Image 1 (tube, rainbow, N blue to C red):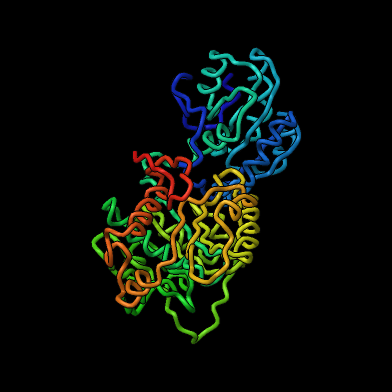
Image 2: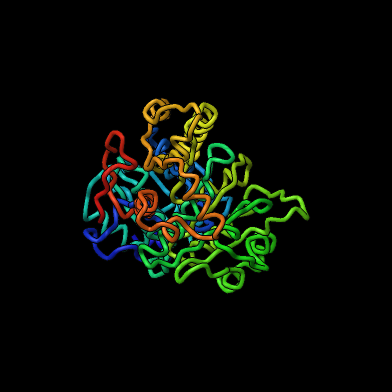
Length: 423
């Protein structure tokens, strides 16, 4: 038994305490690690393929090979071992340690090993843990099991939790997505007394500075163009205080340069935002580029805002389909219908609009030019302009939904929003 010695910290002292199922929604992204999975069954291969497509694995270099423990030992006899090896084996408990011995002889001391076996044997589990195996799991396993095992090994449980990120984007230009994002950021910060950062990602035309009556000298441009300097301290210097709990990372809103970005340009900004505040609200411009796809793939929640016409319906359908593929293990994006009931404009009814989208709106916001116009011209939010208006209550309810503080029930016909059960 001493032949298997990976010099790995014991993952759990007792089998009863070993984590088996992970909550993906609250799981931190995995760090930049290399993982090689050896699968004997097609089922595990499919599970690993799903893991590879999950946004929390975006930094992980994952390789999947159809093969056994012997194949792993042969491969790593001539190549360095990765940070983590995941092995599926059908070996009997009596033979498993002997089967692992050739691999132990070629493993780097720092390599972690997770075994997926076909025998539910508590004695075997304890023996493997004592011999340096990080985790033993019983086939069949779900994607959440595998990712929870990786997170238990590589994510520091004592680290501060990441903040929640919510991205708002319009299905079409001019549908009020920015206005909704700004009012929701303000609502989240006020309703829950939670430190919130609003990041305006529309660098040439962003309106967050106007909506909050601010004129900051610095903002998101300095953050995205200097990723090597970006940390919590540098970010704090770029933020503008809008209220007691709301800070703004403003767009320059100038046309003195072309704002062309690489696909991962905003990822360092997102990482620092999540470490800096419990909630980050991202105002994403109506674009479909590599960087907007990257942002929408990485955030916790996506909200699509649309007006009730045919172009919005087509675009919302395309965006929902694309985001469901980009985020296969996350819940579908939320939908908000805005500017409903505009005088003299032919509209598609909410039920007809939502039927082909296969989703219900979390809010239906009526057209109110006076209320929104007065708020915009005075640099104030709806809840400041008219706190008793039904639209102010709607923004409050949206804020509860996107932060996960409510259970959404089916909307009543004719109502602005479904009944909400507050936690």
